[in-house]
Amino acid sequence: MKTKACPECDGAGVVDKDTDHERQCPNCGGTGIVPDDDDGDGNVLNTRGCDVEMMAGDGGPAPA
Image (cartoon, rainbow, N blue to C red; front, side):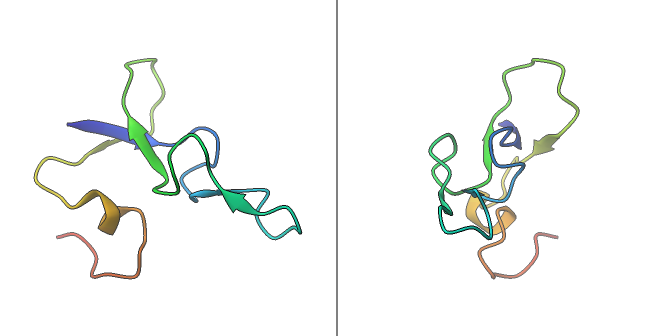
């Protein structure tokens, strides 16, 4: 499955970061990635066989 960095939070998983209004991104649910919709955005990630949460920076080991 192809995914890309969430356009709403730029892959951070949160919106309004470092403010009093910081909250989980409603577009990606806090993962920082969304399915690729072939809209031409160059931030496509190939998650074939990868744990999506690990790629979102949950503190786990980096994907190989």
